[in-house]
Length: 466
Image 1 (tube, rainbow, N blue to C red):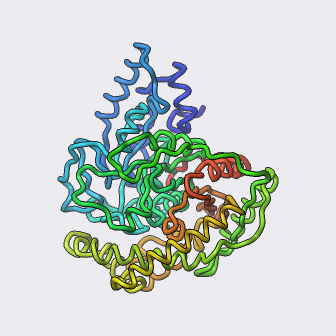
Image 2: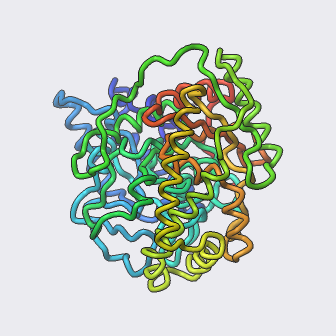
Image 3: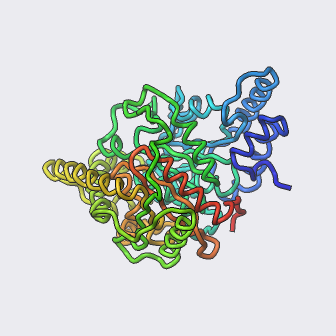
């Protein structure tokens, strides 16, 4: 028999709503799974058992009274330790911030609660959430349950590992350089990067404003084991919050797109050689879409490599000017070595160079939006390489390799576009995967295409560590 922790959010919410199980039973099932597996994978670094069980009992009492139920009523979820949750540290993987207790929930935490979700734990991130590898001196290393030799990804590696391990169906992550999509890829699950402004994003504990890269590119998003859960997670997390000046009230479903919907296939993204399993994953996904009536053409969007390089120029400058001093002061040694590699690959620009990079982004985005008017979906491999070995970015050479083999993780944030990571195919215990990209606020297009691919691939079940 299927256990409650194995279900996705849509099925679990339905069972709870119809009285076939309860929020308390669902929460206990997930907590038992965490008891069994988390000591091995270290995905959840702050357990919230008592708080979660109290919330679950309150949810059951509310249902017994006949209160209105939210779309995630009784469904266990997690949040990431770089996001404010009242009464808990926003430590961001940094030892010196372990006592930085949030006094207020971030908007996405409020939205989870308003939807009836039960928060069972907080997931790991690298120091300052600035690596594609999830380890830090405060919480330790998070393990990829598919293969412990390979990274669980970052910076939402704890969320990715938790999703694959069955620690609840929906897990919060954030993404400015692949931090939702790359962990989803590494752990063989679904990851949605929404359009900036779609999901309100604001840490009440934060002092001062965000650098321009964060304003233009940073998002919050769900990691799940089904595309329909990603759709549900988006709907829940996108609820209004006026504390984020970027939040935009845009319908989740866009206007009808002329049929057949044209898909641009880029099976061999530039930047580095593409692993055969990944180029094959893109071609396989293209076949699935063609069989469903999409019109697929092998054509590359404009200046893809240049988009990735522009991310390095803008965000590299942001990091080296604003974040680097704190990294040197507070971060662990692996984070410092990663930063040194970053500085070697993408040195900070001077002011004229920075201004020109922002102007180049504007020009490139116009060209991409024109391209997406003709090809509403772009399909590409999730990465050019299989998930890297643990600690591969701890040298300048390794950091260079990590950055050059993941152009799709940074080109899409540079442009501020939504994208969806979906597993396709296998490489041993690892999953290969593809990324679907659409125009701004057209998450509906990538979700619909992702559902086609998922239906052909079969369900993405939780895995035991291997």
